[in-house]
Length: 191
Length: 191
DNA sequence: CTAGCATCTGGACAATTGTCCAGTACGGTC
DNA sequence: GACCGTACTGGACAATTGTCCAGATGCTAG
Image (cartoon, rainbow over all chains, first blue to last red; front, side, top):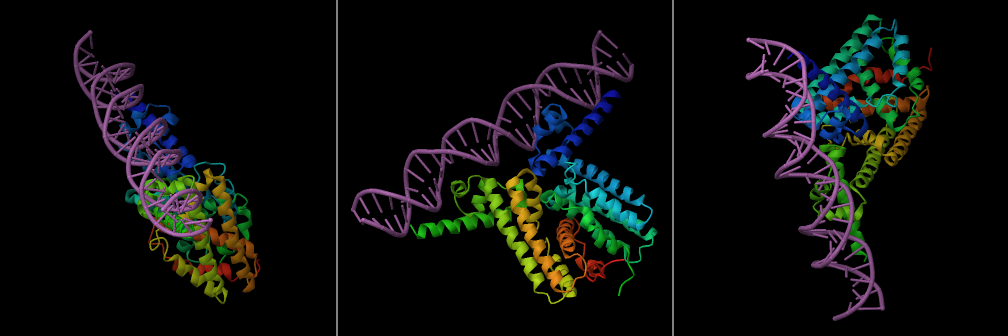
């Protein structure tokens, strides 16, 4: 019962991946047991064997994949050497959302669904906070003179907002935001 | 057949109102024919009499109510006498989202759904653009020295992002964003 | 009053849903 | 070999879905 467990783990990963892709394609409530099963190439019963319900699967998929997404963004940001590079990098990252990655709006989808799922909301709040903390630390480490926590909150909201709006208006060019964003980063304490 | 037409109009309004409320409560895909009918206190068949499908009703409801919401925000902003008042007013407005208004996230819900509904996307793009234009004109009229169009885009995305994040983290206090936001508004052209 | 019209009713219909389960497959242990 | 546990199959089940429609309702015009 060693290989069997391993296979189970692999199947669960495939279910999660399928769920993530489907949330991007048909929305949170559009994901059904059979759709996931078909996408993951397993029989419909498997979903219920590994997860108590479709909702449980979606919660697991969104917290996991959402966590990875936020981790990738914050890690990419942290690798930037100064604040100016950070702005450039963030805008470049935004330019690939959401068209190139159907799951780019997964977090937005999860945020909306979380209003009816307290458990999911708690998970997402943790992810969101971890992201903010990482960003704030990076800001402080590179000489941002204002309140780094506040700017981190503003940035995370702005990123989600831009991704959301780019879904409606693909013409929204993130690069255009460079000027005001740079002003935000390069602060003199204030007037 | 005068009173009858009037009654039809009223019924349609009740359906739209019910749809808006339900999108806020159960999400875009959670709204069903029977739910709307029950909420609007009409028989299920009425929905199909006035709208070809539930999706059509949702599209109509979101474009109408979403338009009114954006109109209210931009009008409230336009009434502010200077840029500083504008920041204060926007943040105050955000503080009531989304807890006080179950339909506050209606636009976010519609934005996500629009990726599968080109017709809806077109409608939303028009609303979004109208909002941006109004904001940009107000910025210019009150002496904003940077690119007003860009700041309008950034602001609209930020507002949606903050509303979305406040659904997950009600502790997010919009007032905390006052300092960086003021810096954005009070520009010297740039370095 | 009759005829005509927009509106509305309430249920029929097939299709799809989430959930559940009896049975199968298969690697590991004895 | 027999046995066990994990993983999976494929279909049954009631409930809910979107859609449609035959008929009732009530106003208006002639």
